[in-house]
Length: 398
Image (cartoon, rainbow, N blue to C red; front, side, top):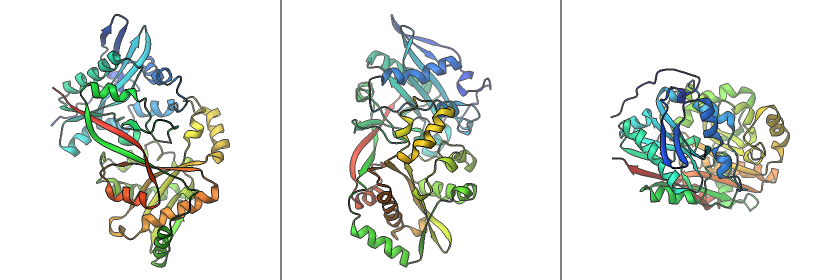
């Protein structure tokens, strides 16, 4: 089993400890390791070239990208990475990150590494060279299987979009051109699993069975309340534990400290981004036993920011967030001893009631692992339809 060898600390970012390397691709193209902040800025800018004519693409936030690769990110206490940028005539045209999460390796008991943050112009030679660069680095670390795309953690993004290209992605969604599929499959990568998302029209009538289940739960002593944003720290104490318990059996789960969970995007900012009436808490005997966290689709605003939040972006966010008319069903969790009692359906019911009050036009549910049949059936029970597929690939390394 591979072991984590800590890099010599140098610089603010994890990649600044890397040794420079230039890999020739063709007469006008090379691949370079990222070892400087300027190289990292090139890494970040690649998608602007790839998606310059794509009306659905949402520019990634520079602040989020910077924070993830900072050495102080607790993720890098048990992980390592090497970033690569492809240049054609000195213009950054592709990128990839090779990543090893040693806690994931321990969890699956296999030497698995990831390729992630993959972006490339429609040039198969450059795409192949990027994937080979990731493979070579992973192999040098005794990794025997490359999985991806996985951006380090599954909550940072994973899978290539395989079905459902003609729509602006919802918050936390992966988005990629269709030609990426040919890149990885022609490179010898095979399907590992599919992750699926569902579409739901909140304007349609709520199924009577859903209403009946909700009423039965309330009669049995279940209380539904909103997340208390003013007491966010107190809420997080029980919520993080329940979330980790809920997802401990899900694909991609890695057990980490509560402190690390609190540093993640969406958790550390929860007091500001949470919509209390879309984060429902189910209680029994005045104790939280389940939660359902839905988010307004902030991508409707982020799409207009060109990757920069800052003061201007933050003001635009605060002013326009009430105009959002799409919602993402993000996370749902129920304590083990309370499962099978319809509590998840009960929370769905009250969420749908809230969405009708707001005049919400569309809802995305997912992603869900294709093998998670109980959750898929529960989703289909409210009338949701499968509409997007993300595919994660794997390849055995020599």
